[in-house]
Image 1 (tube, rainbow, N blue to C red):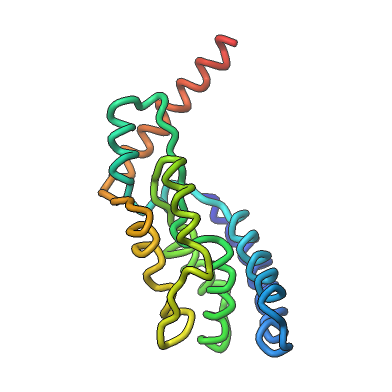
Image 2: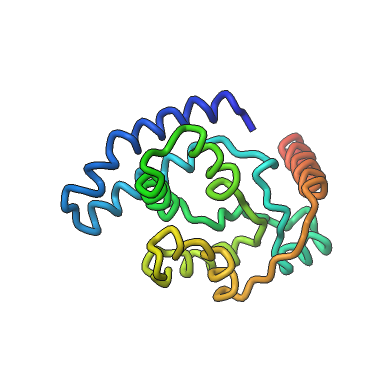
Length: 189
């Protein structure tokens, strides 16, 4: 992961949250308006750098089976179990709960939660999206932060996806094999 780029972009993300949070919580915005703020912050998360260090070490059973049978044709998706739009709302709510969200807080939450990804097949990723919507999160006592704590396990259970361990070294190996195959294909064309 490019840490310099991460720090540069977290600075911007922090400034956006810091400068808009009071308006977000205290101006009587409707759900559509706060949803737009959540989307803006969530989209910003999409532009933060990623890398294998954010890999959770988990892969779906079906993706692993496909990878073992047909590694060159298996298309893995880096599925962020914490959806971006919900991540936007999460950062606003965390800012409110802490009284102030620092750049270091955002980096930590990104590396430990919002940037983490599992490996799944494309069709599994599509199935998960239905269960990762804000309206599908059961509201628990203790507020939003408590309610989203188990979003990953809940969505994966509802989509009938079982995660298993998959070492990062194997994932890196797979990426190299796919890259070499892609380069060979380009040369042949």
